[in-house]
Image (cartoon, rainbow, N blue to C red; front, top):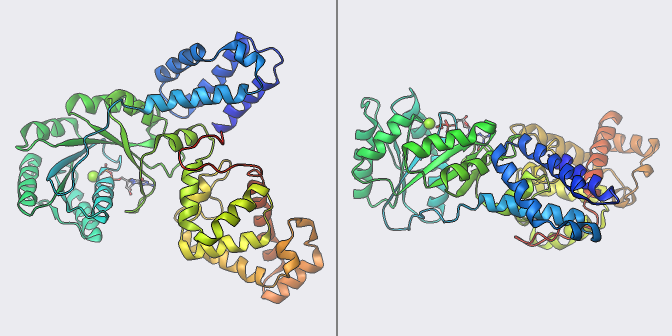
Length: 436
Ligand code: GDP
Ligand code: MG
């Protein structure tokens, strides 16, 4: 997506005369790209109309900032779509709230329930989980397992088949136990959910619609169907760690008139992030998630190394020593694949998801080889100095095969190429989009 949008903007910059035709062509190209990213057709079409109103052809023709003007306009329009106009109901710590999760089976409700509970527990809440999914066999066991892992109280039944009864009993019990966030997991069937909502003595304070980011153009209809049977008040988009860019989130907001509040970024309990419009839209447009990237840098790179790393990144000098230092950080801090996956043009090839162990072993192997390098080799940003005799010496010194040293150097070149793209970039502070 990012590729075609930049291409469209590039073609536009190359055109000597910017007339309506050129602008239309550019917008059509962007439209195609957004559709591929699962943004609903109607939303894209409306956006296109708005942009034509906003973007002044004379400005474009005169200006040197055509790219920026259009990009900014597209960016703003997408942000506007994601703005539901009003914040969702926010539970208050210490005051009992009931939150019900709805969404199609497999969308990630049970997983997300636990993430949501765990997130609040870490902030000092007393959450509890109620399994009102009596439809799927094993549903209660799954919730029980998740809840136990996170040390969160749970309620459910193997015998009772009426979800309403379970929900009512569970909510009552946890209210007595002074839980302030009572989370009800459901089966994903509209009828059951509508009944649940109707028949629960304490109506849920908030209904969260959970949507799988990979469902594509089906997002709008799905969200609308749930909105029609229960009063959806917020959206959580899951599986954002996958290939989907999450354009469906725009549809979910449009269909439910509710904001996205969190995104799920993996199967684990803590792979859960507060939703932030701007980084989400940057990612959707393939612009790289700079503020998310900065957050990750702050998390992953030790404080005292941060200014230096950013400086080096903006100079575009990616040396073997920088790679070595980043490897050290990765081994200390865990999955940097998340950091890399946010950079433009960088898929997490170095540390594929689910293969962290293997990747760590590989990184350690690379580091052993780099331990046999001279300072000159480590600090050079010219890969050409790594000639045959040096490679042989490093292999001997580290007890590794020549082939392995070459593989490591290939990895370095691949990383260097990507990092060199960041040359001259000014890293924005959170929320600042000037790097666009
Ligand atoms: P439910 O049927 O709606 O309750 O969905 P589940 O919570 O059982 O999730 C279905 C599958 O999606 C499970 O295999 C989860 O591990 C997986 N899943 C849920 N959220 C995420 C996510 O954010 N990322 C990834 N990669 N997988 C997820
Ligand atoms: Mg479930």
